[in-house]
Length: 468
Image 1: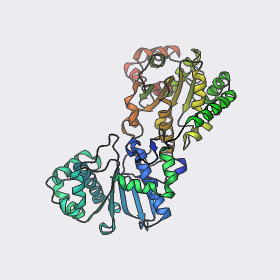
Image 2 (image 1 turned 90 degrees about the horizontal axis):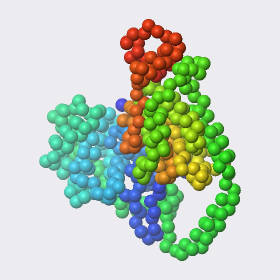
Image 3 (image 1 turned 180 degrees about the vertical axis):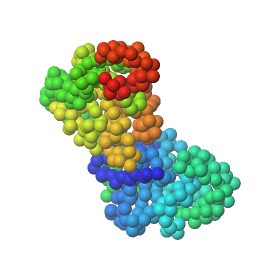
Image 4 (image 1 turned 30 degrees about the horizontal axis):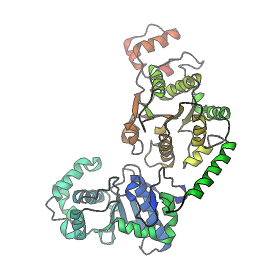
């Protein structure tokens, strides 16, 4: 089981929607996205190591991917794991329950039984447990005397079996086989909770002001009239310098060259081509009204199902309909931030500013993102580019005149943690070709005498292309 790690540069951290915090008020930790809560804890403890070094640790790393072995941050000393931080975020401000606390700690202990490097020395190891909304009464009581309470708790067997049954990597374990070793770890494991008040204290330290600015929108209670007047003046100046619509459309076309010029026929000479029904369905969806925050469509399919060709045909159909469209191939244009990605588009203004200008003259602006799954094929790979595209998608979905079409393999949509949220949007299937479509293409290249077995094989678009 591979594990991947990240060392984040705070300057490159991007927050799509920063929660607002007013001077003199508590920080709205519950308003952060779950992944941003993990990142802020990583940044705070990394800052503590850099400025005080009173924790006794030498470095910290953030876990990436979906297999984190029951921890979100790992702390090291002398190249050995000496502590971990488990983060639990609640968008509804619900405190963590006793059962959830217990099962998270049990899961890490069971992983440690499989991999001794996760818990090299039980006597010099600390399990930090932090929650954005704190812990409920039972959980607090359990954690206060954890070593004495946990091994004899009436629910320990049930909790352990639930963890084993719900975790693929642990499913071959039996509770009776691990009970004694598990109880020994639970009797000696040092558990320390980090409650919201502790996080507030860390954030209040002077040297963490840059972390506050990165994760929160800080506002003072003041008279905003002079600022609003200045903003209107700045907006007026920017308006005079904005590029014309005609120039933006040409820049969109140039930025789309990788997908627009993709080979879209079944042979090398440019024919024959096949206009698949799914292209018309996507075009119809684009033209139809959608509910708020539902302006994203996902084109999913297996490898070789022709997703890129479908989007190539869609791109040209949109241009024929004189609808502004920019098509991005995620496997080609890579960057570790949205700002860096936008520089690669070759636009006179940022992508969002360009869309705002186009929105004054056009009812719909379409953004196509092809092969986002190519960024997630190895969970141990750098995840920055994938998260850059997910951040971009979150920015785009807030604009009512934008339609976003994203293509991805079905496997990655089901199993990649950063792509799973996309499944809630409208899904379009790039399935196999119909038998009549295959026959039509074969007739166009003067092939006859085929049998049913061959026809079924050639229903996969990639197979038909290779055959042609």
